[in-house]
Length: 289
Image (cartoon, rainbow, N blue to C red):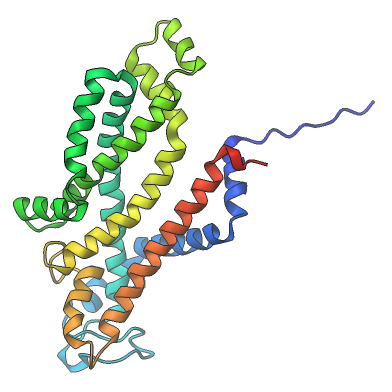
């Protein structure tokens, strides 16, 4: 009598397989992987001192060539090298700022959804006040008050995304807080903090992961916007929005100064959105076959 071997696939394995079936999500994942690798090894790909910040007036405003793949800017600096190093800045700002907003907003949303009542009303009314202000205007206000540097940009963007995560987590927590596993944890004497962080939040991760992925794209765009108007990363540090701002004066004679940084922003945000959409489909149990 032959025994049948039943293969137990983990939840993570199922999600990964469903994600790989989404071709557009795979495209976004590959692009994002290449961007991360290039950001990590930016110093190996292009030397920071000689190619990114050092000025060479003799080679200013050169078009794309074998020596300078994306051409040079008005100061003779290599645009390809600046885009590679600027990608490191954009990814760091996006990840750090969204991590801050995820932790703070997630905790506020979890407490609001779990306790309800007055706690919910107080927290969510405060979040509604922040949501009444467009996120980019809120970020501009915070940066203008704190000063223009990389840390303040991350703080400003992180604060502007807190209400979004608070509402997402609150809705998810309210959907699972009355489930049987929560009642079981409460019956064995688990504290509210233990129930929230060990039982409730782990079962709300699907919408949180999707929102975090999409928010990183928004944070990168906000960083570029702040730098474009002079409130973000300051020269000579490379940043895509700042490169767009400095290159707009040369649109007629040297379009490559704005073309390549603009493409970097578009491709990065497109990749994150494709990955976010793919994760949303992969994490949706209704699509499980």
